[in-house]
Image (cartoon, rainbow, N blue to C red; front, side, top):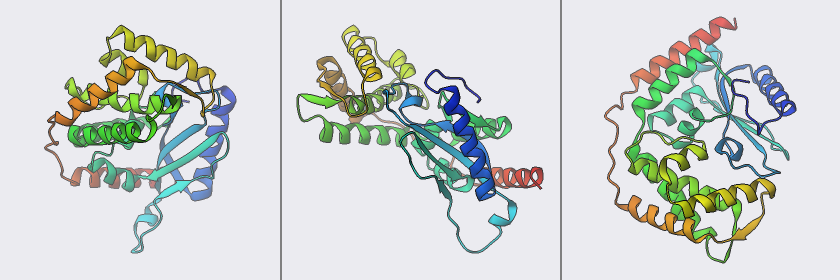
Length: 268
């Protein structure tokens, strides 16, 4: 375990590590990075929240030297506690080239189950070069507007949905401040973007209630948060952000080649 975290028990850490090892042996791959991507990584888990484990992996060299396209995702059947899936490295790098927000969030997860430190340091550098504030804005604005339209029609709102839209709208405020890639951890977003006491009080109440509730729990609307959401969406609609200047794939090609080659050599 790279990062100890109170929301992940010792027994669950052991189960996750065992599952990742089984994946490597079953699919003949090497996992280079694995993290928590769900509500536990975000920092607002409920009592019955599952564990959303995401990972990046490589095959041996011969997997890449064939004409036919192969499956580039590994997914384990979901059970009541564990949801585990991963992307093959070339798929992950294609998504990075397009500044995929989900991949970027993985790299900022506060709960890391495993990482090859050299690989991860290089991946972080590439992510920074290919990061697009414009795509990030579009992603979080779409989430905010979609959730507002579908989940905020009545006087009661599912607590889980409040945090989904809050994460997205605070990420928009993060971008409005001229910051780079928004962090995954909800607490970091709040600390950097919210100074209204009424909003902070309501967020702290929601965090407490959600930690004691189950995933399907509903609660009353929060007027200060609702105002913040509406204001953040309105500002984000007008926010002008730039695309990155760098879009050359050769850096990613070189990284893929070197990583696969080193991985194949080390496991030969």
